[in-house]
Image 1 (tube, rainbow, N blue to C red):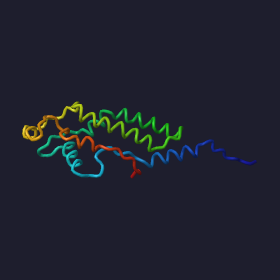
Image 2: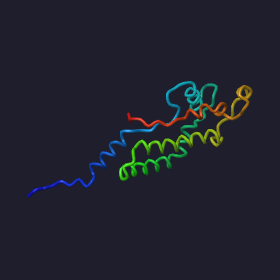
Image 3: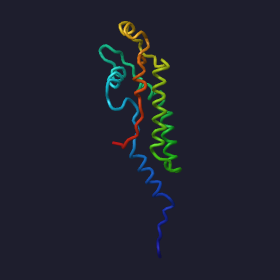
Image 4: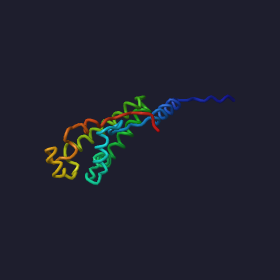
Length: 145
């Protein structure tokens, strides 16, 4: 009796899963610099700056939607052959846009700037003075660690 193995496409599905899980998406101020320092100071607070967790708060608020995008993306990768980078960029763009919206819409409920900061910057609204930080929030697809 001869036994023949028939693949039926499972090897290709496994290859796609392996490829997808070898990548990750990063969202934030990538690469360091002055804007990263400002973002970290606001996200976690300092002795002079109150905590304004715009990244964590947004992630927590949209966690369910991010998980849904992840599941939908994995299905497209496995069954439709979509490239992992396309799906990871879709998730990253969603989260980046929500973070930017959280900052610019003032819906974060963040503590207003101190009086001394208002005098220097001319605004009570935190995180928005030059717009550089909000524009520095990027998406990067890279190899998983």
